[in-house]
Length: 298
Image: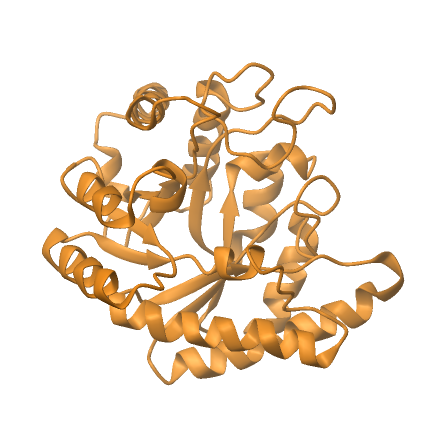
């Protein structure tokens, strides 16, 4: 493409993935000082003093702020589709808190993920997730905010209730029957472990997609790093690289997601493996983005 990727997307990264070994303020300052980025994805900050400083940095940055509530669920192992109502309510409570914290940081919504499921109770779990999501959307609407569900694997790593893509689209349709402020977040790094490709996911979920992530995954069982671990592009045994990202861009273009007036957020979710250098991994990802974009036909 002769035109810049920044015309059509707000390119971002995820603070706790790109810089897992730095303090949150240092990580945010590093990202905010780099004009490659148009967006930033933050999460819970439990330190009151640090939280005030974080808000100030975000306000100075002119970055679009997004809020990922996934760590609020994954850390304490909370399940928004738990069959036990008390357990479901715990997950909903922290996600309601996430909406408030996102608003404080200047974000216009939150993203979260479904909880684990079991075959015998999957229909009940679906109903429980629908209850949680409807409640979140109703609360977010009072603040003119949005709610996004990230589509994860169903039997490899996170083993979340939602996806694969057809189930994600069905769920999004059910939520949209009541709430227009709901959308799906799809992640290229999850496609190999949901046994799908860009064409399948983008075309299936097209009416509901509001946010994109990109990254890599090791999808071959037994190889180092197997699962949803967000390794760098070029990682041994990894499934995604420049060709797969180019294919992803082609699908986004073909399906009308190049919107210069209201660009979608496209963040990379790439994490250093073991003792890899954080700054080099960020630069690696930028190189792959730049190359894939350069190869995209006008």
